[in-house]
Image (cartoon, rainbow, N blue to C red; front, side):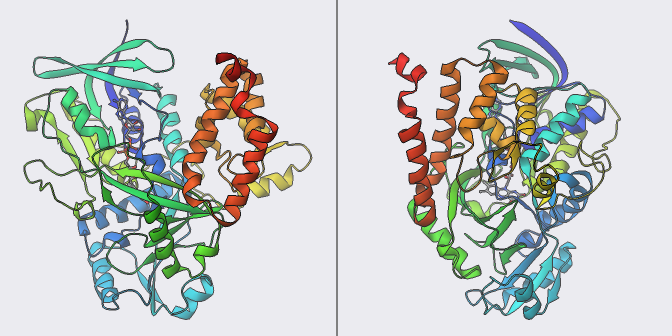
Length: 525
Ligand SMILES: Cc1cc2nc3c(=O)[nH]c(=O)nc-3n(C[C@H](O)[C@H](O)[C@H](O)COP(=O)(O)OP(=O)(O)OC[C@H]3O[C@@H](n4cnc5c(N)ncnc54)[C@H](O)[C@@H]3O)c2cc1C
């Protein structure tokens, strides 16, 4: 078995783990990061897309609100290229308690959330699809954040400083020498081999699975209360600003414009399964009904797809009440130094929190790592821009279109919905070395538009086949896996135009390509 040695082993390549890898690399530590999936394929890749201003938590969870305020300001600078400065509005609709608005203003003032009341007429002029009977409107610095861009920028930044980033490597066991964790045994899911990673400190950043990983280290009582939430992407930006209902956080009370779509969300159901991807029709209906309260007519718009994420909410086992509602558990994060807590050194768990606060979580974690290693290197992630964000300019909708208009004749488009050019696709295929079209999708937004891959995915498979020299069987398998993954999100919203699109896609894939009987697939049976 191959043995790798490092200063820090990070388990988990979501925003938190990638943030830890970036921070630790900037402090000169040698890092290995492993994830059982591709990066940001856990909760980080399945969230609502909101860079919180803190407004959402201003009344209910002032600590969480304060953390969001600070991190929002920092990330706008250092991760500028991943953020669209859409701004945010909290609006009182006819369905909300009108008294909440004053508590909201007071909460924002106390938590330092920048909040300004604006005339309703101004809000309606800016966002004409909003419910016409809103009675109050508050401007806050919410924004939307592209998580895949962020996490890959963190990973690339760490790699440039020598970190080894290993997606599709699952931790099977944690190694201990008496009271010290010494690393982990990791299985390479693509190569099929096991690796022995010896680390001076191991960081458990495995999100909703943090309890399971802690158990592998022989530590009990790291208790997560996973909260499952669904979100629905509509095929247009029905709003250009993040819109929240001005009320206590509840289901379906926010719409976030992300790239070319907007996303309605979310729910919060307690689950025992950190990989729970259940979508109930009743939840979809409830979400669309709630969306109507903010944007009347939303139900008539075209819903593209639905997905589920599971919140890694931490509750200290000593205080846990098994009947707790997950919405009532704090959104603040938990850093567990297991030397202090359990007498096990060389092992730290970081979990809970929000995507908005991943940088702060990483900073505190690497502070603990440095203290264990006797290093006095200071955190630089508040000032060091991520690769691609050096200019400090935020991403703007229309950039891809603007680029395309400059290259009308010299650039072949592979995905028309998301304007993915062939050169970009080839670059991503070469860079990732992946033969999984879904991995490429997350990097480029390939196949994420209205046709959900209907027109582009066989073209992309052809390009990948040529570049990687895939066998027919591998190329077929990649198309089928992509279609299966897309289908999971489409079937719960099969109505109206999306139903027509799905029928059309079915003709393409079954009628023209006969995907169930592609030569390589047929030769297997
Ligand atoms: C429905 C929903 C909506 C949300 N919306 C927002 C929002 O709008 N704004 C916001 O700020 N926050 C939001 N959040 C919260 C935010 O998404 C999470 O707090 C954050 O993404 C957690 O990141 P993480 O890196 O800690 O966990 P994850 O992203 O889950 O990363 C953990 C990683 O560990 C890996 N892993 C697990 N076990 C192993 C193993 N044995 N070996 C190797 N790797 C392993 C997993 O594959 C995974 O990639 C939302 C959450 C949900 C569920």
